[in-house]
Image (cartoon, rainbow, N blue to C red):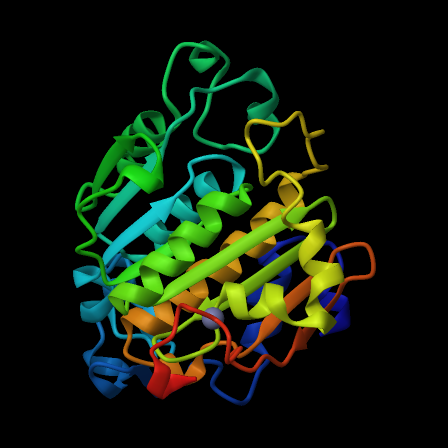
Length: 297
Ligand SMILES: [Zn+2]
């Protein structure tokens, strides 16, 4: 056979090799979580490829009905917000609201796939993200809001995803989510470092984490842009760390929408992109934290 392979290239090599295989190279059954094992002779070639979410449905805990019917609020349409909205749409979320008060500046363009040079000083972040991300799936509805999350009045959402670089807005969002009992997924980045925390009803929140001595030093990295009235140097930021944290946020949202909160990350997860490592700090509810009812403390 080796002699036959010589002189062939690419697909030719593969076809010659397969012609010598004694074991059939195709499985007799295809597996689909919704339909179970399907005899291959009943599967029309390419039928799975006509379902936009076929590959995702093969993940056993994914509930596409839950994902498609969830109402998601994305707070922040900057670097994390761009990536999060992209991942949400591609994952099948169809009802997304994105809120941000800022317009586009040139330095956003290195980390925001939905922004273009022509948008600089010529468009609001939330509106541009909504328009461009909608092009990824005709079934998705993305509602942009230009404003501060502190001014938001309608909180009819099933999941909140935080994409903020501002501690005041982050703590407001955390308190609102806890008070309303809405699952809240918070992400933050600082250069090659990233952080993820899932706040579920009755579980420790962001404020519990900031009050814990073992987390204080790490939290400080992600809260240094807290006061908009002060001059604060911009933190380092790059798309690779942003993409990792955004993907982790959306994966947690998928679990929540699929009714699998039991799979959500516990505590606070830190990602170190320089070392390529990740670690999770356990977290208890702070008995002094005002975001939890007395009976939960
Ligand atoms: Zn708390």
